[in-house]
Every structure is written in C-alpha cells, then in structure tokens.
Amino acid sequence: MSNNDYFRYLRAVNGGISFLEVSEATGVPGSFLRQLEQRYRPMYDEDALHKLAAFYGVPWAEVTWRQPWSRRALTFFLRKVVETGALSQFELASGETFVGTVRWFDLGALLLAREDGTEVVVQRHTVERWSLAGEPFTPPAEETV
Amino acid sequence: MYNLWEIRKRKGLSVSQLAARSGVSAQMIHSYEQGSQEIPFNDLGRLAKALYVEEWEIKIRSDPPLQRKAAPKKARGHSKPRRPAKKAAAPKKPRPLPPIRETQIEQIDRLLKRLDRSAEALQEQLGKPVSTLSQKEASRLLNDLQQAIAQQRSKEHEQNMQRPYLPESVDKFELNFLQACQDGKASLRIVLFDGTTLSGLLVGFGPYQIVIENEAGEQVSINKLAISYYRCLLEQSDEQ
Image 1 (spheres, chains in turn yellow, orange):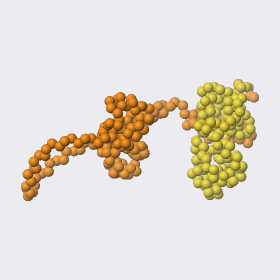
Image 2: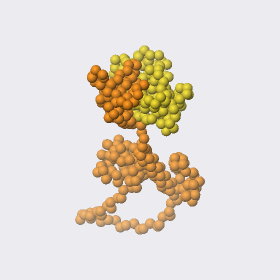
Image 3: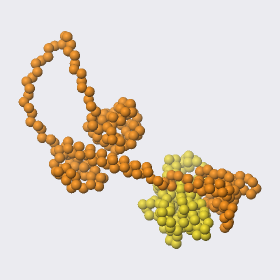
Image 4: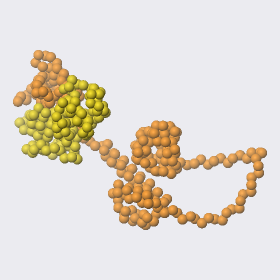
C-alpha cells in the first residue's frame, strides 16, 4: 500500500471524512491532502505528515516507511517482471504473501499466476511491499520512487 | 514550422486577442512577430496553447511579416512646394558588422549540448570558428539550432504519442478479465481488506465496484477499494 492509498484508507476508516474536514482539523491545505492521495509520485512534507499522523493517531513510522514503496515504484517493478516473466512476491496489507508470475497489470490491479496453477487478481492498493521471489523486501531504488 | 504571425492570422486573431488568450503582452507578441526577439520556451508554450497548435509548429524566431508598400501621398492643392532634394550624398563605406556577443556564444554552446553536437563539427560546417561570426550570422545560426531542437522535440513527441502500452492510464485489463469471467458465468471469491470472504456469481462490474449474487440470491455490490484480492472460479476449474 503506497502512502497515497494509506491516507485514503485512514480517511475511510475514520468515517470517510472529507478533505475539508481533515484540512480544518489539522491546518494542512486541502490541495496537499488531495495530492497526497491522488498524485502518482509520492508527496513529502514532514510538517504536514506529522500533523496528519497526530490527527489519525498513527505512529510516525507508519506514515514514513511507505514513502519509497510508491505507486510509481510498483509500476516500475511490474513493468520489469511482466517483461522478464520473473517470479515475484507481493506482501499484502493482510500480512499474506503471494508468489507468482505477473501476467498483466493496470491502473488498479494485477493478475498473479501462482505456482499452484491458480490465478488471483490482486488490487494494487493492497500491496504493501514487493520483490523478486526469494529476495528480501528491500525498498525500491530512489530513481523509481 | 510557421511564423507566429502566420498562425495568428490563420486563426483570425488580432494581436490583442492573442495577448488576452495567452497572457503574453501584446508588446511582446509584436516583438516576437517582427522577429526582433526569439520566443522563450515559457511564452512559446502559452502561445501554442492559445493558438491550439503544438509548440514545434511555431518558429522560435519569426520572419518579419511582409510590409505593405505605403501608398504615395496625394499632393494637396494648397500644400507648400517641396524643398528641392538635397544633393545625393557620397556613397557610405559599409560599416563593419558587429562581432558575435558573449551571450550568443554561450547560447550556441548550450544548444549544441542539447543537440549532442560538438563545437568542432559546427566549425567544420561553418568553415570558420564561431568566435569570428558577426552578430547577425550568430543570430541566424541560433535560429537554425533552435529549429533543429524544435524538430527533435517534435519527433520525440510523436514517438511518445505512439507509445503502445500505458498500463498506468488504463484499467482495461481488469475489466477484460471480469468480462471474461462474466461471459463464462463464473463466480468470484473475493477477499476483503478486513479478511472477510464473499463468494457469488459475477453479475456486474464497473471501474469502482463489482456486483455478485450470493447463494441466497441477494446481489451485493462491493467497492473495489474494500477488496484485497479475488479469484474467478469457472465451473470446470477445481476450487482451491
């Protein structure tokens, strides 16, 4: 789950409050909140993120560790593994890890052909971390973030 | 590539209308159209937008528009007799052309870098070193180099336009997948974010939700944001 999706998730589990309500409560501009959730590249403003972490009552680490695991970085990875057909692994927000070959991916999902022959459509927003199969989950290279 | 004034006239706009549309002052537009100044990239973008053309279609330095010949003034009956013309002055010696400016040399260097061309190759092409050019020659050279850059950019733009595969901008793969599931009268097993599992016959889908019919015959619409992953279970497939 990229930071975009994480903040959307936080807003959803807090009763689906609007950007305006979050903005009024934290003093973080609504435009920043919108971009934080919708922009393809990650946004970083330490002061704003501190305010949001305090507002949602989540630890600071929770809003920072995802920074390199951005949508853009996932796209880079998916493009690479689709081209090479490499076996890859995805850690989901539920804690499960799926291993398989990515057949396709698009805006919202990816199709993983697992080694047991089953195919599963994984929603991109649920993917926390990824790597080639058997390799540790190391944060993506900076140029892909 | 066309002169700015040509495109403007073709679009039936006056300088002031173009100024209002683009946010570039009428004075600057006039100066660009006369070719007395090159159009900087930021203004080029604004003008291209306002004229609904691509940036590369506009010449960075316009050729000045052809001037109409002024009609000879009619002599009025009561006008004073003209003074006799002065004697023709002796032919002037041609003035030496002003040498290239430092800033022009720097700009040429920058453009050569962007074109990935060496100064030596340019010197060979010109037949003399850049530093010996006159201001006018340098100005023409700059114009040529900028046109070459504009052409290069337009080629890149075309290549980008032909990029065949942009998965970040489409969601067709998932929609095609769901369509195939629906056509095959498949059921879906959906695992939600909170671990809940829902199963049922796929009866509809859209970019943001999936509708299934559960065993009780109820239709359940599930927002994709709530979904973690799902499987399409065709009748012949063996369920895991």
